[in-house]
Figure 1 (cartoon, helix red, strand yellow):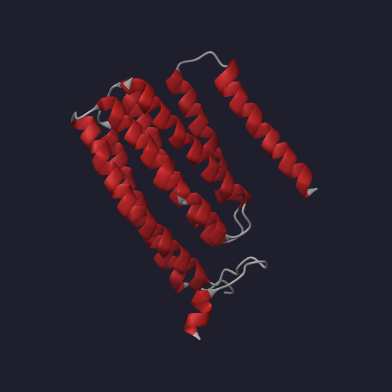
Figure 2: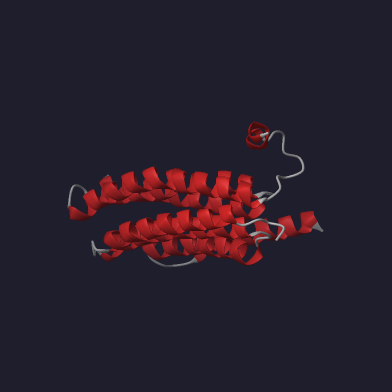
Length: 108
Length: 112
């Protein structure tokens, strides 16, 4: 039972990793790619780590997996936000069919 | 031309997935690692191809995140708990590296 549940969580996590990487290839723009690839973090890698926690239980490895989930959930959005701001200041143009750009409007 | 490339890429991806989960006779752990290896190659393609430096930074960030999942799967299927220590250390290093890249991008300009 526990092994089946952990395998399901790991498979869901790896599937989200694959979808995030397909988005990284397919989407037209830095900001769109960032939006697709941060799904890779919250659902993909945290799903894999939660499956590992279900498999190992409350042993040393399982608790370390839980700590790793908390750490990744705290740091990955910060890194993505810093990358988006850095890319905007670097001067990367938006895709030509993008609808709005509030950051440039606020700076004026 | 664009639609032909799209079709070829999606057919290759579906064939790889069917081969890994249907045809290949191997353990479950090997199948999961091969599945993650496809993700590694997709993000490596974006690092090679990416038009600007920001694309490469995003792909490097995602590569670090994928390594964390890979280490977690290794920890389960080899029975050695210290692989999760490697995952935590890699998460720390990847976060600091991404912040440094973002700060580096902020100081430069695209036209220079």
